[in-house]
Length: 206
Image (cartoon, rainbow, N blue to C red; front, side):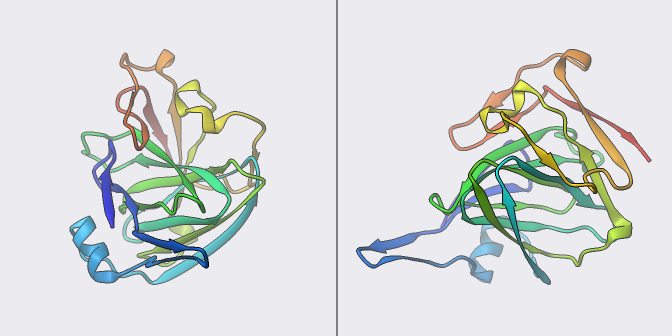
């Protein structure tokens, strides 16, 4: 398994080894020992979720606060999405910054999002089947959201009409402020992920 760090500590791009031939392919989608070696921590998954969404559907950005925090291991088994994590950990040097990557059935990538980070995705194919494993059970009273706001810094995967669910901002809400109304800085991109390292800040309200 190939492990690629992103701009955020605790967010890792995982690429399993794929064995393909004329019959199709085989891959090991999860191995507890290999996963814990990759992320450097013990992780017990207690819930698996599967969503299907049409093109332009935006799910997130969501997280659960302590003591019901969740780590997530996510992947796409049909279609493609632009997947994003936002650092909301108090005291983190990257608080308020985000990292994003394309996940698709073709590239077989997975993204690990540690507890304390918000997560969401935008569907970029006609539809997408999205799977995620979580280290905590769903706890509606602990759910928080980041209000997504269209910005050119979010990359080409965010263009076009979008559909948001009615629970996109259910309780405590953070609003992402664009660079023009915040502090100076430039966005950075790596070969594997797109990220902002200083082009957005968060204003929190409860």
